[in-house]
Amino acid sequence: MMGRVDLSIIVAVEYAQQNISAIVEEINLDLHSNVELIICYTDVDKGVPTLLSRHDNIHLIHSENGSRIPHMWRDGIYAAVGDQVAVTTAHCVPSADWVDQLLSLKQSTEVAGVGGVIINDSAATAKDWAIYFIRYINYAPPKKAIVADDIAADNALYQRTDIMKHTELLKLGFWEPSFHAEFRHDGKCLKIEPELRVFHQNTYTTRQFFNQRFEHAKEFGLARASSKSLLLKLVLLFLSPILPFVFLSKILRAIRINGHYTKRIIPASPWLMLFLIAWGSGEALGYFNALKTKN
Image (cartoon, rainbow, N blue to C red; front, side, top):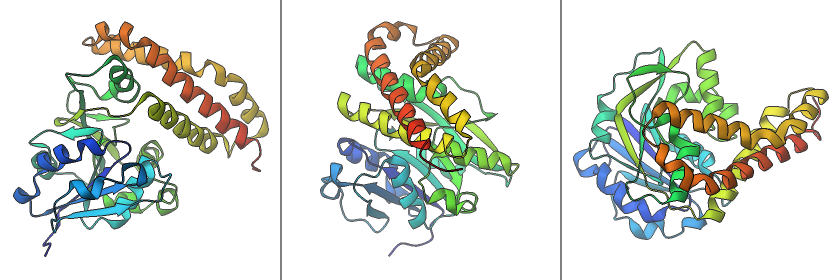
């Protein structure tokens, strides 16, 4: 029987069941009886249950088919027992000391979330590097322990009570940028803790990640534009073709500032542009769909 739970770890599995065994091994619940592991998945990873041994502290949640990572995080947060919740994805394998680092973090009431760094797999392909640049370059080492405007929910610790204050928002999924904005509005801050480390081990195929970017961007565009005036919706839609180039500029700037990955840019470039076009197209469709909504 599961005893006291100080920490709930939520892993969202999206086309990444291959990493489940490694994740469970690194979390090592036999050494952390006060931790529960909640694994959320859909039928695209239907083999997940067969990869796990029975354990009182492991809980499986079959999310509605078609759910994306933020929807699975939401399902896990609803089910969590711990006062603190750590969220990640099955595309990230934690370091051996990850759970100990999470348990050692002492958050004040002013801190709503602590995010760590995300390190790319040493065997990453050019496509994997493109995905890493798009999703994680702003959270790549080296980092200092600082107050930050944003953290990556793929490696983050939150106070569950802070999340549950925004239940209407949570119904849509745990889309972390929206929650981070709400936390800041509440007068709370976010922090970076560089000792909190996970390793990005991508298992998306090209088609899977292209579709993931497109669908995420479509929801982002719709949410961003829905409350705006008709004129602003039209402006956003009109400007959307330049989005891939805007994002590419930001990514290249972040890589240049980091200074450790410049040799990876040229091999990753074709994949980078393909996935940025997917995002730009999805966001444009979100803006178009927003034109149908009434203010």
